[in-house]
Length: 174
Picture 1 (cartoon, rainbow, N blue to C red):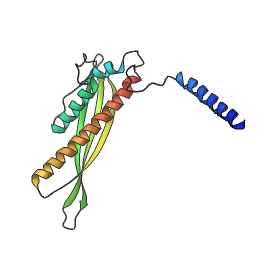
Picture 2 (picture 1 turned 135 degrees about the vertical axis):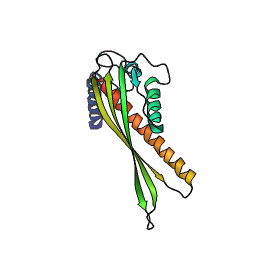
Picture 3 (picture 1 turned 120 degrees about the vertical axis):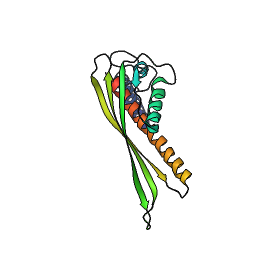
Picture 4 (picture 1 turned 90 degrees about the vertical axis):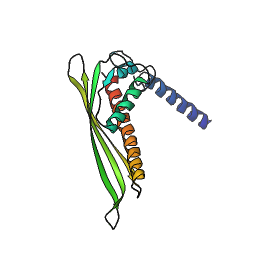
């Protein structure tokens, strides 16, 4: 008898908690019906971000990743925001051998960005994203180049995902 009343009490508490949380206003960031505080759909706001060209191979990779993430591969909306990104690349040597040669390297990519409202020309949001991608150095030149490219691609994907999340979070609250 005692266990039934405890189970009923636990069920009652769980039901009440569910009812209270249902009206708390929480909505997933990437849900299909996620809206901004102005009532616009978040997917439409993200598609209206015009990602400016970024110099270099890694810059192009970051830009392509962001454009695809914002539009889903579809047609971009007429731009309401302009996103300007500056990249800073760095190689960090790891695992230095007795001979002084570095066997391992870490490719670091740091991005600083500014989101500008095109209508007013004001910077409305800015932030940073950073990624580190390790890779191993080999005796063969082509293997080193390929390993570095792979590390650059992984870092570019991570940085673009971070920028996308930061922008979505900002646009969902404005």
